[in-house]
Length: 345
Image (cartoon, rainbow, N blue to C red; front, side):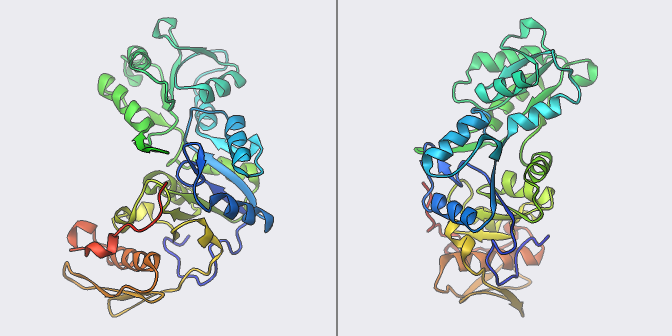
C-alpha cells in the first residue's frame, strides 16, 4: 500500500468499492458537504459499490441510510457499517447474549444490543455485565456518573468490560466543531482510572467488516480525520483519501505521522475523478504539478513555486516533509504552505 501516491491516474481508477466516513465527508450536521452527493452518485453510476463507515453511535444504520437518501444518495441500511455494530461484535466475544449491559449513548447502541439479545440498562444498580459507551448529543453528567459507578473495579481485578464505540475528540456540526465521544470517554477514564477498549476507527476490525460485507477487492476509503479515518485505513492495509472538508486542515497534513498518512489528499470529492498529479523528487526539490518545495538538511523549507493550485502546493509540502523522515517541529514551515483556502462547512 502506498502511503502517498506517485500515480498519474485518478484516485478512483481500479477501485471497486468506495467506502466513506460520514461527518465531514458526506455531511456536516443535517446538510450535505458541497460536491459530495453528486460525486458519490457519479462514482456509483460508474459501477462502484458505495459503503459508509461511521464512528457516530447516536443513530441506527436505518436512520443514517434515510438521512443519506434525503440528501440524494441511493443508500440502504446494509450499506452502513456503524461503530455500535463493531462494538456489539466485540462485546459478544466476552459477554454472553442475555446479559445486562449499561449503555451510555443513544438509539444506535440500544438497537444493536437488542438485536443481539442483550438487556439494556442505564443504571449501575442493575449490576451490568459490561458498559458500552458511544456518542449521543443527549448524554449527560448523570450518564457518565452511572458508567463510573459501574467501572470502579479494574477489569484485571474482576471488574466488568468497558467498550467505547470510538474516541473521536471532536465532531463537526453545522455551527462548527463540537466535543466528540473521546471527550466523554475521557471524563469517565478520569473518574475511574481505566481505559476503554475501542471498537471503531482507528481500529482495523470495522474496516475488515466493511470489506467482508461488500466483497471489496480494491477499496478506497474517504475520510476527513488523520488520527481515526486515515490511521484506521492504513491499519487495515487499505488505500485512503483525506478530503479537506471536515476536521483536519493543511497544518495537520504537514505534521501527519507515518501511520496516518493518506494515499491521496483532496480538496473535495470532485477530485476523485481527476488525474492525480505525479509527485517527483530530485535534489531535495519536490514537485507536484507546477508547485515546487525544497528541503535540505537544516530546518528551512523553501517554496520555489507556489504553482497554480493550492492543493498541489500542500501535496508538495507534505511529501517534501514526510520524505525526510523528520518530525514537523524540526522545520521552519512557511505560513503560506499551510494557509487554509479549502472549503469547510
